Image (tube, rainbow, N blue to C red; front, side):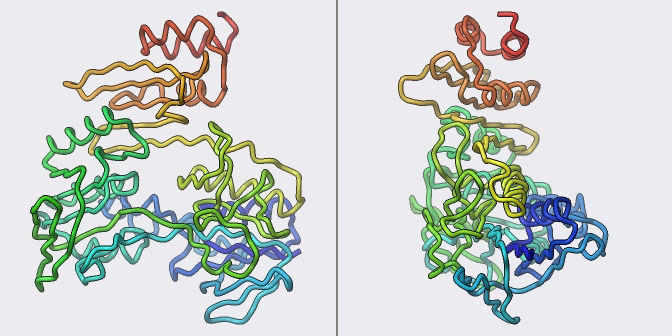
Length: 416
């Protein structure tokens, strides 16, 4: 059997290595479109802070790791896929046959439709090449404008601050990380950033970027402007699946729709990671869950089914995000924004940047937000993912949300 994997990120590499464990004789080829060894994008901020070197971003540290385990890594871009002949066409190389194909090609940054956004002083922060450009363009005291205060933007923010840059963040939403944190939590995070010397402009948009030679003038809604040596766009991503055009694969908002076996609508073609539209554990609905733990889980499950279709089913990915913003930890779990007819409980200590919000459906905990509170991260996930009936503990948690550990022990150990 020949298994071809498009994408050399965590989903693709975990899938390749899982296939090798399951089938010692299989031919495994990973196609990645970047010249570097397979690496983790999530490690790029640590590279920018110089906590690690480029090799520290590599998914496997040993130079000949893939050769030793019998996985061929090809540097090229997939131009098209032909399910009829079970083949794919490469941009620069020959065609390639496959028995099973895994699409783990990740996502691509979206640049906002702003005049001047394609200028020399604007970059994304998505690849190692981007990271090199950013590292070369910022110095202590440099003015940097960051477009977007979502999850990706806030990860980059940490690295930019540690570099000594003077940072301005422009976010369209009414709060920071609006897809992860509720209004109170996101607003507290904004206040924290402002208190640490970062200028955060929520409810704002960049309207133009004007190149001035050794800097750029960034025009912002409300008649404001900032002169910057570097502009970094973190305004979102889209699934990287354009090469599937004409292949008959069902897509949703550009991402590959997968079933419980990680298979697409076309037999033999599977998908994993940011390019896959899979089941959400909490809602049962299908969506893209663009976080590395989900990508790794997808890759492992897809690999099992590529070797033996139907061997492992996907029950849905638990959406959980943890973010460190200049030392303040925020987290979201499951349906943190609640459901119609549900109940909630909150605990606020705004002066000390501490916040806990719990969401209930019936007597089950279905989601939560936390800020500045890290002691029960695993317990909160366990309660949400376990779908436990809380019974009397629901009312106790509504009275005092800090009783999370006591509630967890009670419902998991059957002590009432």
